[in-house]
Amino acid sequence: MLVVEDDVTMAETIRDGLALQCFTVDLRHDGAAGLSAASGDAYDVIVLDIMLPRIDGREVCRQLRERNVRTPILMLSATSPEDVTGDVLALGADDFLGKPFSFPVLVARLRALSQE
Image (tube, rainbow, N blue to C red; front, side, top):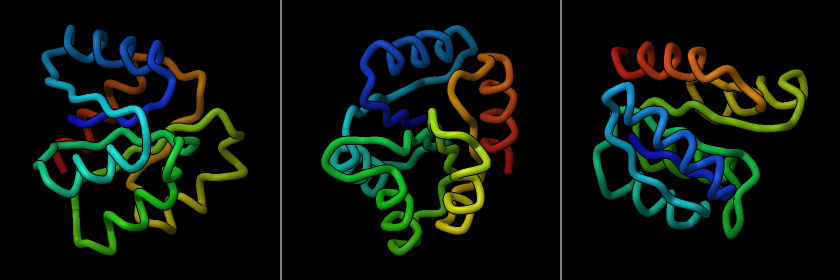
């Protein structure tokens, strides 16, 4: 699984929690690094924050879909879900989760996406 999150503490918390659930997680902290990793490696799921340095998450999602990368994408944002959910789903994201989120909900959604 690839987690692209610029908040290092948040990214490491997600990684460590997912490791306890038997997920293997790669971290990237900006959109350009996330786009490169997601374009070059096979991941079961990509967790992608919207607000990222260098290239924002919306653009990363759009470019991945344009490159025919079909890996499921769960997008994260501190922005109100009503403000962004339709937008990110239209770009090709498979799911959206607002911050702060419940870790069990994140795990359940990632398990569902990884089995699609």
